[in-house]
Amino acid sequence: MVLPALSTLDDDLLLSILHFSTAPDLARCRAVCRSLSQQADVDALWERHCLDESLQRNGSARPTSRTYCSWRQTWLDSRCEGCGRTYMVKINLDGGSSSASTWHGAKVPLCKACALRSLFCYRTSASDGVAESMLPRLARRYAPLGQFVVRICGRNMDGMVKELGLVREYEQFVEGEKRLTDLFASGARRSSQQMM
Ligand SMILES: [Zn+2]
Image (cartoon, rainbow, N blue to C red; front, side, top):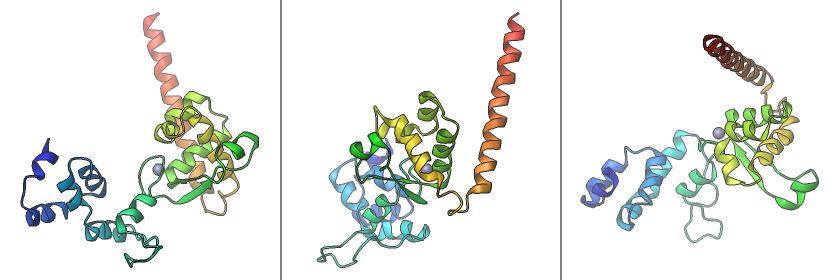
C-alpha cells in the first residue's frame, strides 16, 4: 500500500526516504514500478548495506569493465538461499551419483544457522517433511527435489564443520532441537491424557 504511494514523490525526497530503507525493502521497491525501481537502484544505497555487512564488491568498480559488479548485485550475490541473510559458506552440490549430474557445478550459499539445519537433516536422516520444514525456502527453490538438496548440503558440509569452527554450535543446535521435540512430545502426551 505504501510502496506505490512512494512513486508519486519528488525524486530527491524519495531518495532521502530510501536512504533509511532496509536492503530487503529496497529489493521490494524494484518490483513496484519503473520510477521507484530506478531510484531503488541507486548504487550508493546498496553500498551502505554491503559495507554494514562487511561485504567486498564482487568485481570491478569501473562500469566499463568486463568484470564490473554493482553494489546491488554484490548484495544479491551474498544472500543465503535458506533465509536471505548474508551467507557464511558456499556448499558444493556435486558428489553422489544423482546429484553430480543433476546439479553439476551448483553451489548453495548458506548462512551459519541454515548450514547447521542442513547438517542436522543429514546426520539425523530427517524425513522429507522435516527437511522441507527446516529449510522451506531452499526446498522450494530446488523443488521437487528440494528435500534431497537440503540433506546433500548437510552431507557436503559435514566434513567442513571443524574447519569452520562450528562443532560447539552444532552441539548447541542439536540440544535446542531435542528440547523442542521433548516439549512437543510432552504437550501431545498431556493433550491425549486430557482426551481420555
Ligand atoms: Zn540462512
